[in-house]
Image (cartoon, rainbow, N blue to C red):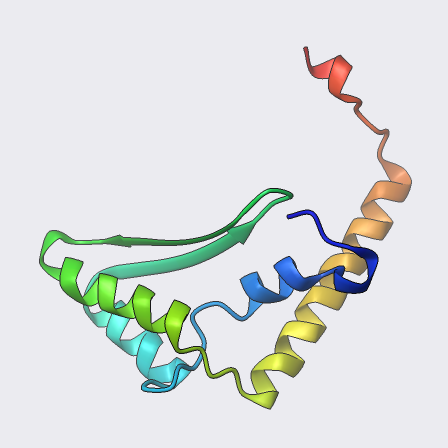
Length: 112
């Protein structure tokens, strides 16, 4: 996702807070419902997209769509979840900084 300097980290934050509390479910309820119904929820971001993904067993398709819709339309992220995301993002950024300092850069033309 292309971010302006003032927005730097927004995509990572949205990924880190995906599938947390909503207006109708706590994060624990969301996790419990998905686990007990064969549903796997995940999120990822890259430079161009933020993706919310779900894998499920055939009988759980209606519930899976409901959980995805609830997550996207009614997020209710608690202060504790925001703090957790900040810590997680900080740890990731620290890892990337350390990793990039010791690894050679591969330019796009080297991959062709």
